[in-house]
Length: 451
Image (tube, rainbow, N blue to C red; front, side):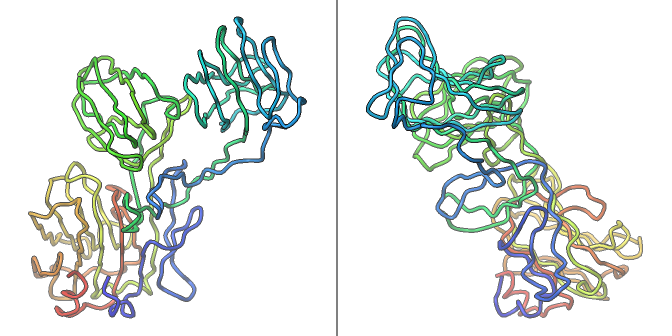
């Protein structure tokens, strides 16, 4: 946004501060701040300013295991073939046995991390007594992280050596995963640039145990699916779709959208593949980890900013610097309104590709609709919708696109939301800036603002 115009804006949102349930505006700078109410009933991921994927709303509890570095030969119960020495626990036996430690779990998700040096065979990680939780099987060496979601209370943590296996382990850490919902995301491009507010619809990652992904079978319908991952490996598809997706770098995300038939899709992993995701969607959204159950990211909403004191119904500008997640598909709206469809100003990323619509309506009268074609919705577009008592105009990326005489000037507008006035057609995409001006800017100012 053009810096020289900031002092004229009554409401400004840029990717800055937030907390659970609130997305802060930059302006106004005195109370009442009239910030956005933000909701998402789950955690979600973002790309941070270092270009790395991290979870928003997920933290970890205290360490639950004692002597996880095996500094002493204590605190663990060793089955046949297990021994502790040199700060490691060793297994080498023709019969599968366990090393265990007493601890208490509840119905929750737990993160398990340890170093594994595997000479042959495999090892399994789980909670038990009573019953056995989901088991994670590991077949290669390295620093391993696994997530296990328990559905009941357990009193033991267990690592089991399968018969004929040989390996050693150390540096075991077990922590409860703590989830905090309703935290907005300031995300970045893969190179750590272009900070933006990220808003997305709900999605389900149909893969299970994505931290240890090897071969997965997913039931598909005759519809579009999108697969994505980070790394240098390959996922090969067979069954309801044939093809492959090849990684290009450790921190690079690759994606593939295809139409499957009804049946079973088999995904076979080779090489380094991390943060893998498959969605029943025509495009890939941000990564949502899956454990023993499918990972679900809930719908996001940002609504209720502004007030009648900050929004001038007689004249003004609604400005948005935004990029959609996909070109076309569904309507996505940012609105000023009296919280009804009778008095409104809004920008709509249209369900038709390469089209942006702008709307003005007052007193429940005729809609003034300005339709601009030839605009790629997934690019970062600078859009200014200007109205006064005579006209409504739209400027896009430095030029005036359309002007129309206004039929009825809106009255009583008081709310700024990333939805329609009544909550429909939520905006999903990337938001670099959003602002409301309570006066109609000049052409020179609009050119500066959107250029």
